[in-house]
Image (cartoon, rainbow, N blue to C red; front, side, top):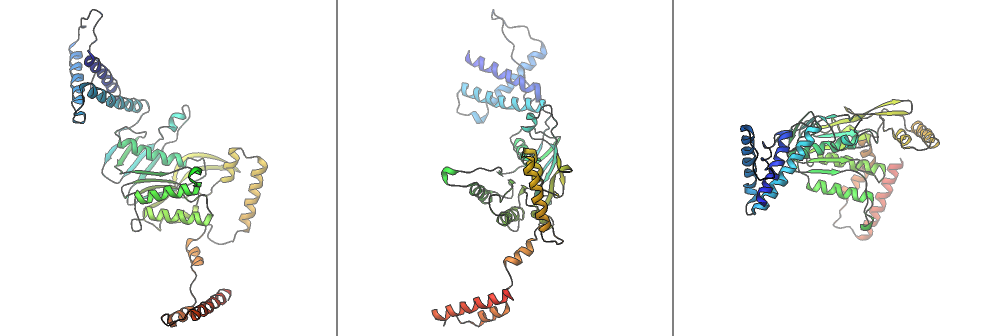
Length: 393
């Protein structure tokens, strides 16, 4: 009696799956009336019932359920069908597409959408975006733009779509081609662990370290604003080094990467490293007001719009007006040159100046094997004087 109940329950779930995506060709078994007499079935209903029995038998007889009792096999099959039916229902109701999944290095998404955010915006338009990632010409996308424009949503939706495709689900897009990834690594958001004595920056660096240790060229990496919580130059240097390590196969991984940042200097990496491309979130500005268009477009952002976003967040007008005054003063006092952003090559020359030839000559002439401690101290003192005179000169 219990076996009959389970089988009928499985048949009902099969019918749900059939209604949405034909995951399993099945309909419910014929019910009995109160007298125990089976109802009359048509030829098509009999055929459908036989297909249902065959589908249920195929599931319950699967090798994955070897060693289970009849009840356990039917419960496992029911759980499997429950998942398939749920995925089918979501796909049918939300206009998902069937992705192409293979062993290539491609992640190509046309009109992709975030499956959760889209549901939260019922009645509002969710702006879909395209994505093209691979391990050659489009290896690392550097995404710039203001806060709240949609950078994090865009990156997360791509990771979710890749994950959904690999579990066998339809995906929120008009078309999708996913090359199987071995792992998805993310570093998004800000958090700390005070109980463990870790600051926000320490937590961020720890997570980045784990990604760099464990990611492979087959991985998908999503990084959001690496290098915050420390000085500008420190953070920018760390961010650049991480991008170089992840995106350049000669230096590190060469895996597919989405990298959001407010360090506009990093956009110079396009052209310097093969496969690095710049994208930004389109913004329409009118005076001191901005409108987020939510559209990913090619090229770097032209501004960070931090004060405008602060105004949208509700900062008092006196504060934002004063911020604009300070910004204009800072921009007016900035050095005038042809490079708006910091030149990394110039910075490297500043941090590693050329050694004066006089110092090199003294070092080459030095015999360290016969040098006494006092002579070594005197030599260091002379070197210091020489270098100081050279820098001051």
